[in-house]
Amino acid sequence: MIHLLNSRSKNGNFFISLKSILGFAPKQMMFYRRAFTHPSFQKKDSFGQPLNYERLEFLGDAVLGSIVAAYLFEQLPEADEGYLTKMRAKIVSRHTLNEVGKDFDLVRLMTADVHQSQFGENIHGDLFEALVGAIFRDRGYKYCKRFIYKKLITEYVDIERLDGKILSYKSHLIEWCQKEKKNIRFEDEEDTGREEMTYFATRLFIADKLVAKARSTSKKKAEEKAAQRAYYKLKNLINR
Amino acid sequence: MIHLLNSRSKNGNFFISLKSILGFAPKQMMFYRRAFTHPSFQKKDSFGQPLNYERLEFLGDAVLGSIVAAYLFEQLPEADEGYLTKMRAKIVSRHTLNEVGKDFDLVRLMTADVHQSQFGENIHGDLFEALVGAIFRDRGYKYCKRFIYKKLITEYVDIERLDGKILSYKSHLIEWCQKEKKNIRFEDEEDTGREEMTYFATRLFIADKLVAKARSTSKKKAEEKAAQRAYYKLKNLINR
Image (cartoon, rainbow over all chains, first blue to last red; front, side, top):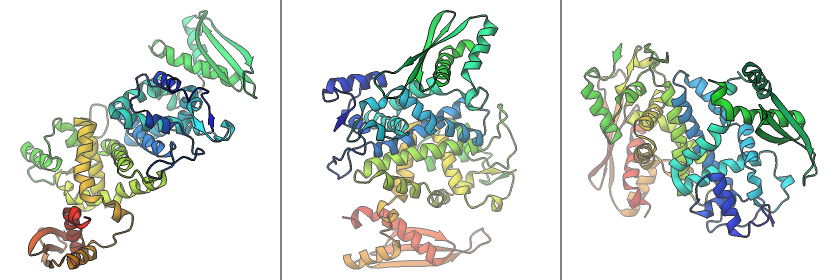
């Protein structure tokens, strides 16, 4: 059995990492343990169901869909149901959920019986959905809604971008800096770290202040990711 | 403009009919008025959105999906995510929702600019979803959950039947009565009422007590519907 968080066996560390992701203290740990157990792990519960995240992922997917639908319904009073449906599909897309799960580095909390390289591309989004399911079972609808607003919607959802109005955060940010007469600078460096692949780490400075950091498999991707993060941080300023 | 509830213009009647369907007093009537306005009705709101049920239907569909998912997750601890997905699809199917909407006779509350015959088959389910959306906006998640449990799940959802174990309520009920040595009797009569079509009305007696009534376009359908209602009333006795 492989514990990806080395000290997962020490309950304390799993709890602390989880709490920092959630932003509140989890109560019924069994839901979260299950949310972070890979299907390769063979143990079953007393109902004969495999002790893994798949049932919670089903629940989380449904809860996420309804909370995002309610958010869009309120935020976009001028949108018809076709537009609402389209926007929701973009927000709960595999692409977005994988990104969120990756940024939280959810796989590090996982228990599995196979190596991380066998998890597949969508593991990050699956874990995020399972986590939403666990929060719903542990603390109910309101906590779940608050979590999704704080961790998904505020950080990743930009209706303008989803609507195709922003294609590159990097060029969007550069334009804005030119208009505002602020200098903007990307500092990239190769970062081999523990992994076999080479990564690029980017630090983005605006007016000589470090605004965002990102890491990806190419310089271009890392810069775009850093620009996106900077954009969300400065959104209120930029869209003023 | 056609008001299907003749006295819809008198606010009181719409309110009373609605309250009896909901099982609680609605607060913000605007959501319910919109939930019962057909797209043929041309008025728009201050955001330029047509004043009809389509946006609320989008919301209600999502909320319904998550509440039914959470119900199944709790009720079926022994089911895997594939089975949960299948069961949910059956419960929120057009067929079931149309049946519920029809039984509540939701179209009678509708405002439209076309004749009822032009509404299409799925109007009943659409209205039920829009009503769920209106409840969610008016009173929030908890009321919505209670409404769906009481009006949809308790009355229409039988996991055994959805799983294909009960094919006909009528034969299921007859068998049970034979086993329990109770006499069972269907009384049918033609019922032309106001409509152009002929309907059949069935009254179902068990041990000479009236247990359920139903009305449909054929005798067979009316008897099956009455048997289904009787089954749900007696479910606890039958499955003892």
